[in-house]
Image 1 (cartoon, rainbow, N blue to C red):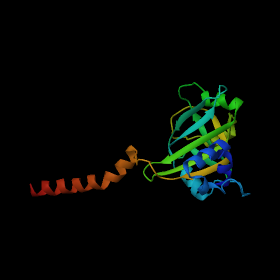
Image 2: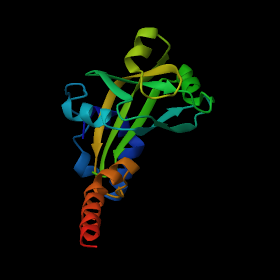
Image 3: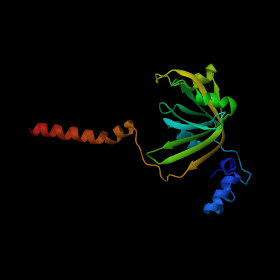
Image 4: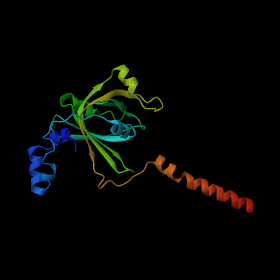
Length: 198
């Protein structure tokens, strides 16, 4: 676990719960040491840029957390530097709740999941919305026919790879098609052979 992630999440109330459930000793030194800031290394960058969706939480002015699913083609979520990521905001239901929340509190928390591999990455950061044409161009997906309204940029505060427990493997249609393609080819070969013997 990242020390930066522990510093942000292991509040006194959380530590009290860890004590109550007997897990505090396993985390006693987490968040107490000085360490280098978290960065998007090669593994995190590859994982992030291979996702076609993720979940992002922001906090409203009423104090309620708001979780939103974000999706697009693989690669729509981009790592722009060792500490910055971003994505094009494709037009959706036009409620702009996340964008509005960021006007009052720029903190966000993301969960990215690779269901087939049962891998999960949690990211905490400070987000902002921009309509800078250069940034919009760098984050656009020319082959994806959706209107880009603006862009989200997220400055990394901390990240954490989470355990694979309780992640049920799920597969996209494209992943299933790729997995069964050899079976379809073999069926076609056998059908052709049967027809020749006909």
